[in-house]
Length: 239
Image (cartoon, rainbow, N blue to C red; front, side, top):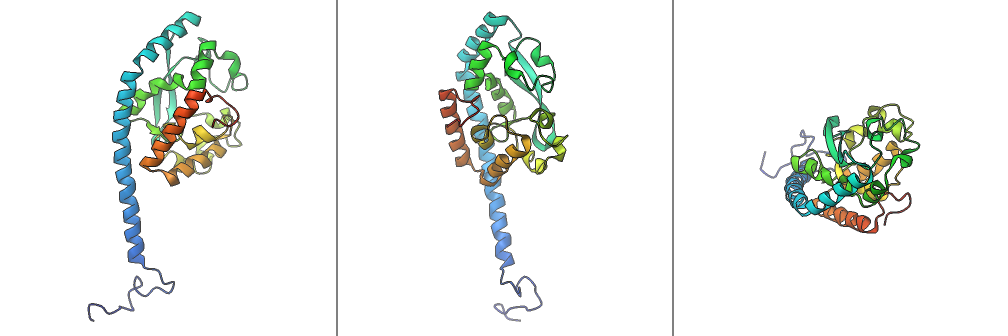
């Protein structure tokens, strides 16, 4: 058979739908390589920006610590367990924004009256997302990224009033945890604050579809706008 002849016994060449399977495989490989390169660039960006952020934000850490202590004493920082990539649990560090003992209870116990436990300083910090500043450490260490699905509590389904009992039962949850959790993202910016987990996942899947380095830059820029406007706790549109 000549070099340019068609082998009719080869299904990749003789395809009744007229598809060029070899070309499709090439396109998939190109998409995979692009995402792999974006992932490497994303990690380098996370390390540099979180490292710079930790240094630049040091005065904010001092001011926040003093404010928390002056209002109702310590502790200043709290550790919380969150669901990370591939469903693995990890710990995040946050500035305390609630009463001294409130954070020791399960969020389910006071999910309906959480605002009653938030301190005055805590309200200001939550509105500007300054309470999540210590999560720069999680980004630097690789547990989180700047952009991705929000790191959620293991009982998020119950906390958000979901119709599902467990996170594993929520449709497409496995796809959601295929990504590193992020400090910001589409869901954090555009979804309503008290939206159920099964609804927020739709925003996370949209990010999975659109994710690229330059799209991450856009979301980070929009997040700064929300912070400057003090709208992170808004139940209406943040932008």
